[in-house]
Length: 227
Image (tube, rainbow, N blue to C red; front, side, top):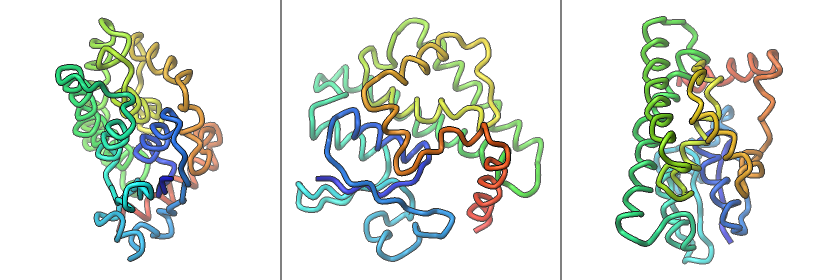
């Protein structure tokens, strides 16, 4: 049994989607970022950096792991799923996983901050992160013109990137004209566990469709940014 401590964010969904895809049994514990649950001593014992997601693997001496990418690699190696044991194929999976962790995630995260959450609108900052996000999307699109999946075979690299790319509208970044990326993004919804994983710990899928709720969410999220 695995205990998952998470929130409905792309990084949180990376792990819940992975768990669902692997068919692993887990308990999801909601960490309310608005109320500061991530800064409470109990959670900091699991995730010293005060960030979600984090897991405790009860079947492995209560092993604590934080950082979404580290968790995904651990689960892939634990189960033998979604990452090849072949050194070359594994390297390609890790390559595109790190692309998300070092590029797509941070850039989209900052785009979210300045486009949605920051109380002052700074056009140069918004443009900086939205443009860089679009450039990264173009890298993905070009690569996906040659491959169905990022590492050749479907893997945790696809899950990691998809959990962020699918939220591009929230970052204010268009994927217009990126037909390969759009094809891949849509195909991902049909992979096992994806539709279930993005509902963990609560469903926020229709947030953008309700402008009032979206505005309220952004306002509440701005409080976290200020801290």
